[in-house]
Image (cartoon, rainbow over all chains, first blue to last red; front, side):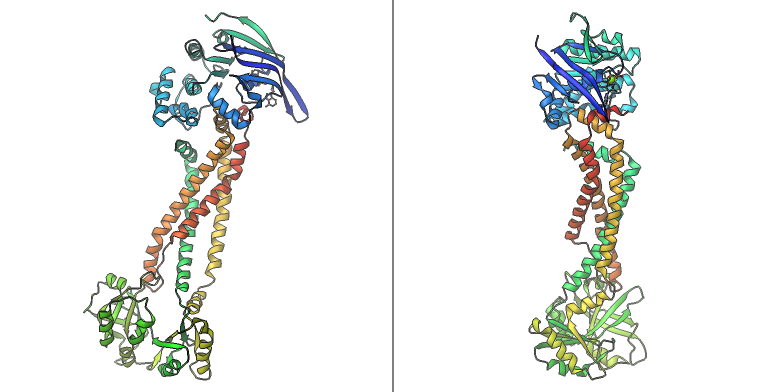
Length: 231
Length: 385
Ligand SMILES: Nc1ncnc2c1ncn2[C@@H]1O[C@H](COP(=O)(O)OP(=O)(O)OP(=O)(O)O)[C@@H](O)[C@H]1O
Ligand SMILES: [Mg+2]
């Protein structure tokens, strides 16, 4: 199966003053399209760093990253921004919603960067709200929603522009077990029914079990944990 | 404009802070509008002063003998001479101050074509010894109409009968369109009536006004006139109508400098204030801007949002301030015109300059925040929680 995400020889170093830390050492990774991949590993092992590279939020020190056919390490900052808007949806542990905007306006945000008309945007937002089960909370501000509901808004926002890849950094890290189950079920549904490729970082084995493949990040390298059938 | 909501919400993120910022901008531009309005009115007054008209007055402000008339008329280069006096009075109460100008009606209108009135009214005024003409705005305000007998109590013109009560037959009205003095409470009367009835200073005028054929000769003709009376008890000071207007304004002070100093101080303060407010607002939102960049907003897009918010806030508030000035100036002018000050208004150009200033102010004060927004890197900003 063709890889949607390919990393070759990726090195990532952070420079803090005189100190240089190499977080990722010559890392290789292939993520086939429509896979639901969970990344696990101890705190500080470089999971977020890896995810940020895949999502085009950061650049590798060296190596190549090819996502959806694009060598993203070569893109300018402006090109990268446009590329993210088209290809990647992001879900974070702390939701990262705009506090001043209602749920529907938060979800609409990525569509402002497209050429869709106001009516089309409205229609798409309504469909996304429906998908995450929040139609009745469309006008609520983030502060008026529970953690689980906020995360569902974030997922709707990540999906609204129909990206090829969903990138989730501990999406259930701040949620109780029941809400976490809903979110993970939703991600699984998106993976199965809409063939969304998902890369999710998690500390939680129960969360990782929703994925079709689990990788451990350890000392800057990747270790295959288990290969599950897509069923 | 699909981003408008985003910009609008950004502006109103902290309501109280925004209201205070808006208020200070409104006040600064209100001040700017008022001062510029006053300044332009005075400039207009000076610019309407003609260069081919000379005004002769006594340097000490004393009256000049009417007997000088024939000598002045004989000066080469002068085509026509008119003269007038002036007294202040009130109609019915001190609330209705009027400026009465006893004029030489044969020549007054010929030399002052800005007074517009119908030929019939003008002819009637010429032949009515106790006739008077009043400014249209004054007639409207006091409810006067032709045929009315109007009593005016003079404040500085005693009559031979021992009273200060002058009576006129209102012949009609005149208008001075497009002039700052349009709304001044001016009453024109015949000099002949004035001079025969008054108790003091008979045979004198307050000033002579000369039309000259060649404006470039103004200085030398003025010199000739002043030399004629250099050794008399009633010396003259002659200058162009424009220089005369300028001189009257100079008595108020160096208005230009005053206006510019105040406006510069207000704008400098405003720049610091809005600059630091915008920077503070930016700092509170670095995380949100990082999220927007994550979603695909470009560096330039985010900094454009920051600048747009500043422009909306500043220009919106500035326009509000200028509109208030626009509304207040004529009202203030009308009140001031009642006591003889020129009418005030805010010309379009001042409004446009004000808006231009507001845009500059917005750009300058948004610059640091916009720069930071542009340079903001997602991972650094998102890491801070
Ligand atoms: N911007 C940065 N500058 C310097 N060092 C960084 C930066 N970001 C991450 N690091 C370092 O890189 C290492 C990996 O960080 P990363 O956030 O990827 O870990 P993680 O696996 O996501 O950890 P956690 O499970 O706690 O989220 C850490 O040692 C961290 O201190
Ligand atoms: Mg992390």
